[in-house]
Amino acid sequence: MTEQVAVGIIGGSGLYEMKGLEILFERNVETPFGEPSAPYVVGDVDGVRVAFLARHGRGHRLTPSEINYRANIFGLKLLGAHTILSASAVGSMKEQYKPTDIVFPHQFIDRTRHRADTFFGNGIVAHVGFSDPICAGVSFVMGEIGRELGATVHMGGVYLCMEGPQFSTRAESHLYRSWGVDVIGMTNLQEAKLAREAEICYATMALVTDYDCWHESVEAVTVDQVLLYLRVNAEMAQNILRKSISRAASRERSCVCANALQHAIITDPRAVPPKAKDDLAPLIRKYIQ
Image (cartoon, rainbow, N blue to C red; front, side, top):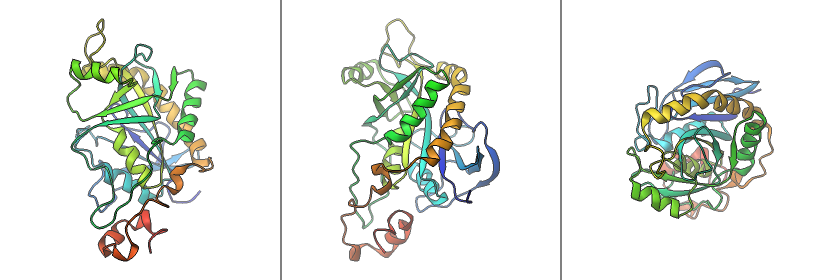
């Protein structure tokens, strides 16, 4: 085992620490994009070096739109992570996805408006393929472990990422249901986009806590309701994350994630400004010297 991190864990609402993590140290990481949400908690889980990050910061200080997604993902790249396992609370947009169920979505719809979601710009342009935004191999690993542990698991589906921090209006909720959306959340899309640009495998575990506000016989979502169901499901979520780490760390990366930038950078290397080249070196050095 090397000092380099293999797997990054990003925990959201109600998941502020990592079960089974033998903590070695905390690390503040400087990035060209500013500070990550919190120091990375680095340690070992079943012999694998991991870095845990509280997405909303310690004490849940950051709204979904205030999170510095670029710094969070870039920091994990600097630590060496080749895979990210994410967990977050979501609302169900379909009757069959009940609170405490777990969904492993494979697609996204973007309804955000105020967030930086690319490392590129400032003199260097790249267009990364994003037709399949989740690393299916990692997602299936997590889903299989969830089933082994007895969770009610749904594989695939569409995650609609909304801006927040307010929850949906009823009109919006019904509109999204008409689109065939499966779950709704506020955080995972930017992580997935940036992880792909960083050539990191990314999968998310969506923990169902509510029915948003579309369900006629259930009260509209509240923070108390979200946290109640997260507490019920916290142990299961932690166990899935823990048991997924070793399998995710050892799997062969034959997916598109590992070389996502290979044909994506369109800027002439001679035209890339020195600062952009230096800032993005951890991402582009194998393609642009």
